[in-house]
Image (tube, rainbow over the protein chains, first blue to last red):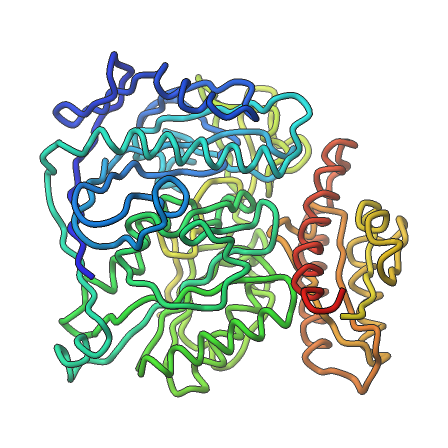
Length: 428
Length: 130
C-alpha cells in the first residue's frame, strides 16, 4: 500500500466568504460550518471560534482535535466507515492542511476535559498551541443524555474536518511525502537482512467517553488485527476518548502517529517496518487475556524480531501494556513499550500500576502529576467554569484572577503516550 | 457468567439489583470497594474486571464498581496481584490529594461514567451467559 501525503502548510486562519486556502491562509466560512453542524437535531447551538499560535487564548474543555485532510486520488475517503464509504483507504494521494486543526469543546460532563493554551507556559505542553485552530463550542438540546451528546460532538468535529479538508483538494502541496508498506512476503524479500519490526497500537476501549473506532467499528468489539500504517493516516482510527486529557490520543494524534512516522523514517535503512497490529484495552479481564494472546500470536505469525507497543490512558491499560509486553517477549520478539507516568508530584512514586522484568525498554511521555501554574488568558473559548473540575485540578485551582494551578494532566496531549510531545526521561 | 458486583455506585446497584448478585453500600469508599474485593479474592473468588477501570483517577471519582466470580476455588494469584497493585496505585493518588467534595451534578456524572465502564464489561461477559 502506497500513499502520497501532500502537505499544504497553513500559517494563518481567518473567517471568509468561502472556505478555501490561499497562500497558506485557511479561510473558513463560518455559516457553512454552522449549517453543517446544525443538521444534527441533538445540537442546540454551535459557536465557531478561531485560535492562533501566540494569542492569549485558552480553549477548554477540549473533547477532540482533528486534522483536516482530503483524499484526492485512490479509493475511499477520509474517516472511512463514518464520513465516507467503508472502502479500505491508505493508497493514492491525500492532501493535508498541515498546521490547521478542528478543536471540539463541550461540557459533556462536569469534570475531566482538556486545556489548550495558545501562549504562555501551558502552550509548551500541548502541540495544539502551534496549530491554527477552528474551534467548535457545541451545546446540546435540553435533556440530551451524555452518550448522545458525546456522539453528536464527535460527529460535529469529523464533519467540520472533512468539510474543511476539501478546501485543500485542488491546492498544490508545499511538500509531498511518500509512505509505502508492501505485503509481508514482498517486504521480507525486499529487505531480507533487516530486522522485521512491527507496531502494536493499543486503543482505549473501556466504555462511554473511553472509546475508539476503527473504520466505524467500536474497537472494544474487535480482536487484534493488522492494518497498513497508511490506512491510519487516512483516518481509519478515530477517537471517542474524552477522558484523561494528557494521555488520550485525539484523532489528530492517530492521523499523525509519531511512532509510525519514525518507523517509516528508518524503514529500509536499519529496520523493515512491516505493519501495525491494533488491539484494545477492555475492562473485562478475559478480554485482556484474549487480546494480549492475539497480539503475541500475530507478532510471531508476522515473524517479527521486534515490536514497539504503545499504551493509551491511565491505570487499567497498564495491565494490558504489561500483558502485551510479557506475551510478545515470550514469543521471542523484543519489545519497547511507550507509556507515561503518574509518579506523584515529586516524581518519586511508582509510575505504573503494573510492572514486569521483561519490560526492560521503556519510553515515557512524562509525569502527569507535575504541577503547573497557568496564567490568566484574555480570551476563553469554551467554558472556564469547568476548569476547576478538570482532571488534576482541585477545588480552588481556578483563582480569582483567572489563573489555574493544576497538574499537567489537565493539558491536552501533555504526556501523550505516542510520544507526540517534548517530555521524556533518560538515564545516564 | 455468574458474578458478584461489588460497588458503591447507586446507579449500578439500582440497575443490576434484580439481575445479579451485588455487594453494595453507599458507605463504601473507593478504597473500601477494592478492599472488599481483595478479601473475596483471598476467599477464593476470581477477579473478573480490572479494578482501575476508566481513566478517571482514584482521587477524582468516589465511585467504583468491579466484578468477581461467584464460584470459589483456590487462591488465584493473578487476581491477587492485580488487586494489590490497584490498591497501591489508588492509595498513592488518594493520599497525594484527597477527592474533592463534588457537587451533586458532578457526582451523578461520575456515577454515570462508572456505570458505563462496568456495563461494557458485563455485556462482554454475558454474550453467551445471560
